[in-house]
Length: 542
Image 1 (spheres, one colour):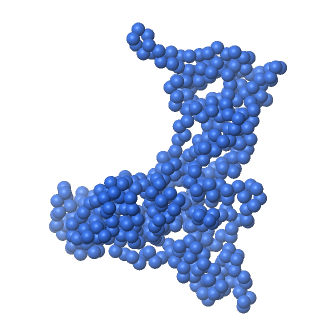
Image 2 (cartoon, rainbow, N blue to C red; image 1 turned 120 degrees about the vertical axis):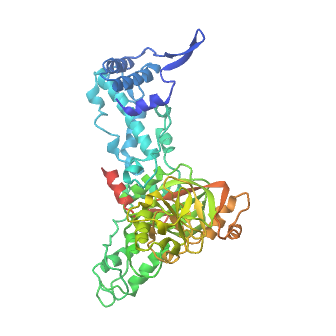
Image 3 (spheres, helix red, strand yellow; image 1 turned 180 degrees about the vertical axis):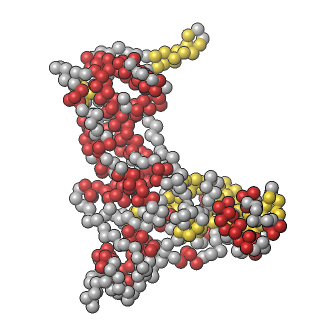
């Protein structure tokens, strides 16, 4: 029997039961209405057989819930009908749902996940157990489709342990009866789709594949040496094809000439990359990192939108890791944007949503244990005065101790805490923006500005470095009732850490989209910096 219907029964305390008072004591009375039709009697017989023939507690509890659910409705089916001759068929609403299942590809889903061999009405004729199973299997297929529309097909945590997103579970215990009673079940199911503008645009782009309007699959450029004007490389003809650059004037299609460099520059500029006309790893990754003509990439990005919160917040901060960019959003409008540096592939920035609650001026940098163990301790063994040179201090039990007095050849640094004092060389710069989380990541300033000039910007230990933190602060604080702004934060600069607790908590989303859709409908592609997109495509296809 379909576990989805069991979940429905469990979600609604009213199914097949009512609360009554007997001699002043509340009790639950099971309500089982007698079947009024031959088909209802057949379904009752099948459910009764499963109920009383259950061999273990799990099967018994499931069969009981199903029996109560259908008992409350006099065992009348939601999806089956019977004609005067006794032949059973799917109801008109069920036929409409089957038609919806057949079009599941337009939603980025798979028809075969719902149109299974279990939905065979012909083989179930005249067999009460099979008819009861057919009825509940159909309910299971409907709930599975609805859940996939709402929350996606893949548990985000299967893609990577660095994706900290719990599956969005559909909680509509009345969905099956609503659908069964509707003349337009497609309209009810459409309510479950994400309403995010970019999801809607990706769905429209996907439809072109099934309507014959999509372009050919995009050319992929292999990895290799960084390409500059004058170089000859076997990948250049592919670049010409990808960027629609005519053949070279000298007849050598493999030469990286000014025309190719100009096309690369225009492509880089369109994505906010460093527009230098040099085809390095970041540019090649962006060229290959998904496209408006790859349905697998579109489906994977639609799936990720299904993982996102239904409400991103009317005012929010959106960090897209493959894009290496942060945006402050007012609805669908970008009010501020800047470049960011994110975690390396070995120390990835996690994917999750939270709320920015604090700003810390002149922050201490509490060195993560992994850095303390892998980098600080070896440095101390070479040079006992290393911490002083880095404006750092060692703490034990909350008190500063002399690192030079510790025998690091026999002592684990995990017994201590290392932090860097506020100051010009502090790794966090002058300010950090906190959304307390189990990953201990945040947005922050940095004294190392050179990395922002690169196209590929995955170099941090996991936190997100912001190129223009005080401009970002002004944009972030636009709705703060205390009238706090960047100028007031700058007036706090000094040797002591200062905490500012925000009255307005701003949603922040550390997201991972290899495709983004502009307001004009243009779909832009970005590199799969952590391989999440490739892994998700594999899972969606399995």
